[in-house]
Image (cartoon, rainbow, N blue to C red; front, top):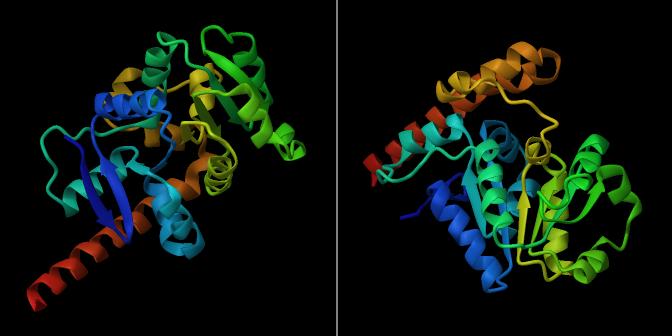
Length: 249
């Protein structure tokens, strides 16, 4: 059973892999437009400091916590039901693709790496691909909404990084009839196999962030060395202030 909790005016849809995937498949079957994105520790910090982005998130039907940091933070602040799982987008998207591959539904990918475009194009049957466009190509294509309506994919993955991907996703929901639009960050790279994840042991220990920090230090050090302490401070602040409000009430 899914559980919705609110933190800093953002509603988080906390659930399990199976329930979230079933919700997506049901939205496709019912042709019900569903806009989905995630929030991890980095995106949370960004949302706290950017009111316009926080307002943008109000357009999303589902915002799910992604990764160890935000999952543990919400678990610390609220009482989770025992069934709630720690959802990681890197695991969710391959699981979803596997289910969709059995249905024949068409998927459209909007990503930022040309290599990803090549990989998915060459494996269109495996990935049920209805079309692929890179970030550079997307910027030149002002009729992407019309193209999507012509192709009629059941699901679109938008992996362009926050906040650009969320802005694009909201625009596509307004301009197209695509049932499901998912912001997935680097998820397209994972689906295509152009990004290699750390060993299973590291992932099971919830230390994927440390692996990225060590092996991709120049790109990730601000996100983790600075971002994690800032994130912890903000969560503790919400815990203290919420408890103070309860006591004063």
